[in-house]
Length: 255
Image (tube, rainbow, N blue to C red; front, side, top):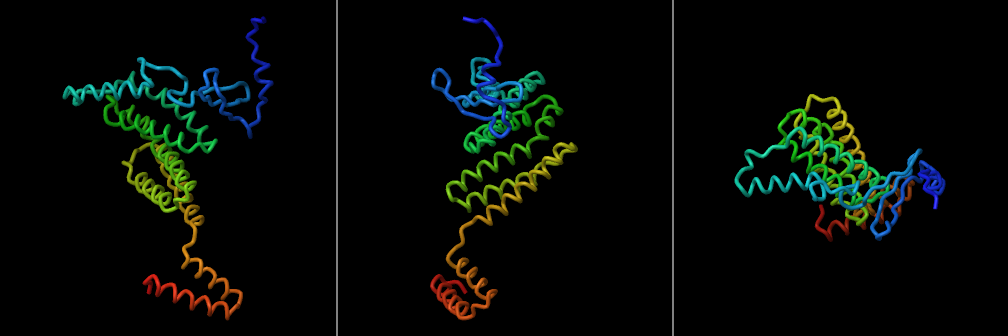
């Protein structure tokens, strides 16, 4: 058996193609793995748990470790003294980047539930650091990205609703997110301002797409047909449609 460390055969079996650079495979134990073909190699992510498969402090993640610390402090009545140190923030930030890399790929795959899961997880880090970090600079470091992560989370949740033909739910999800992003405390930070404006624009565009894709009600359908009949000078059909619209409005109690 060759002891060569050359990975060329592995790369040749999956040539790089920017249009087809993702796949979900099964590991030797049957678990799902997300693989990304890069120009010079292959990245592999665990689909569940921490993306790199590590278990810091024998827990699923640094976040879970610190949440457990916080729960213990609250139980002991010591929340006021609970802090996230600068060193803790470094670990939390580094870990969150791993989840970011993964949820961007899930988004690319249109795996909306896992995108929601991972973005929601990173927002929990933001909330923890915002409330308990010892240093202001650590809080700002994450807050500048909050609009972006909220946008990704919102789009994924809205797409789940649309896939289930729940247009009104999707509309509300986007409307609430727009309100939430707009009401975020102002930061004197160019990245925050750019991401907030970009996210607002993207979500407004999504709201318009949702409205355009919304199925018409019976009344709206008749009104659309009436408009088309008038525009094409089909006057008899227009008159008939007006009568049907009046009858429908009377039936449902619309004046």
